[in-house]
Length: 208
Image (cartoon, rainbow, N blue to C red; front, side, top):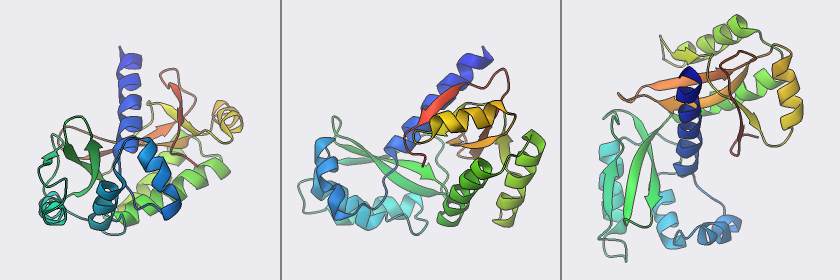
C-alpha cells in the first residue's frame, strides 16, 4: 500500500515537472513545436511567467488574459489546479486538447535555485538520512519556511546522466534530493530518497 502510494507520488513529481513552463531560448522553439505547443502561445506564457519572479494565481490569470487578448488564443480558458494557494507562485501547463492553460504551483525563484544547489550538494557529499534532513531544513528555514515538510520514504529520483553512479551512491546509504510535490492544500512536500525498503527508484528527466 505504502509502495503503491509513493509510486503514484513519483508520477505526480514527474507530471508536475513536465507541466512546469520556464523561459526557453530560441533554439528550443523546434522542440516546442514537436510537442504540439504553438510557439506563439509558448512565447506568450514565457513572457508573463518568466521564472525569475513569483507570480500569484490572480496576477498570472489577469496578465495571461491581457497577453492573449486579440490573439488566436483569446478564447482559451485559464484554470487553477485544485488546492492552489492564493499567495503562492505559479507556472502554467498547456492542455492542447481542451484549449486550456492550467495554473500549477511552483517554488519561489530563490527556493528553486537553492534546491538545485541542494540536489548538487547531496550528490557530491554523502549525507545519511538524519544529516540530509537537517541540511535541507536549515536551507529552507533560512528561506522563510520555518516548518518544511520533508519526507524520506519516497521515490529515489536520480539524474538520467550518471544514473548508475547515483544509484550506487544511494545504495551506500546516502540520501539525495528527489524533488518536490504539492499536497491538497497547496503546501510543498520535499522528497529525499535513500536506501530504505519503501523507496522506489525512478529516473528524473529534468534532473541534471
